[in-house]
Length: 213
Image (cartoon, rainbow, N blue to C red; front, side):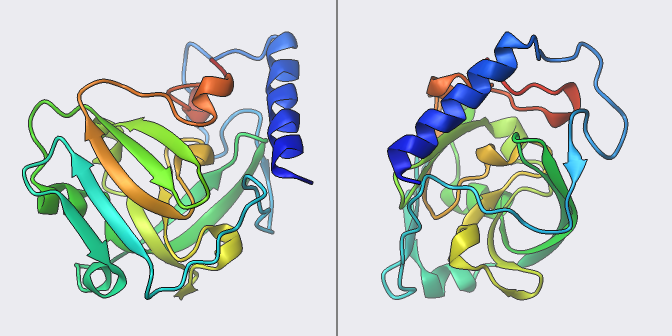
């Protein structure tokens, strides 16, 4: 499926769900499996139909915006930062979830401290090598299990799942975790990302089934 057809199909799917009356719940679910989700043992691949091939020698990650120390890290510099491992669940807005995903990489709090983010920053805007973008509140990004992941299951993160590096924000629907990430920009005002301007929720909380704007 071409990129344009894929985007059109996802937009049509979201509109169909909204037409069915799927709205955010007033009271969050306490279950491990969020409402409306089904467990999968596999790991479906969803992207914009573009999987850029990025050589590690060419990869960089920019950390900029409202920061005192704007930084561009190459692969070696990124790998030299403190590394963490986190096991979390993964929830896709298209109604599947995968338990106990083991990610490795750099905690977003480490990048926050490295860049010396200014007090007026309230949001993070992520951009990717495939043209994707998404936005997340800074509060969510500073959660302890948010990271820029470079490994999955103890092996280098494969290209089809966003390698060499992608963002993982386990407490939100997975479209908020940008694959093929190339920049984190700290902002004072919110800026909608790729799917957010196409009708998807800005907050993306799986436990309130907050899928659509």
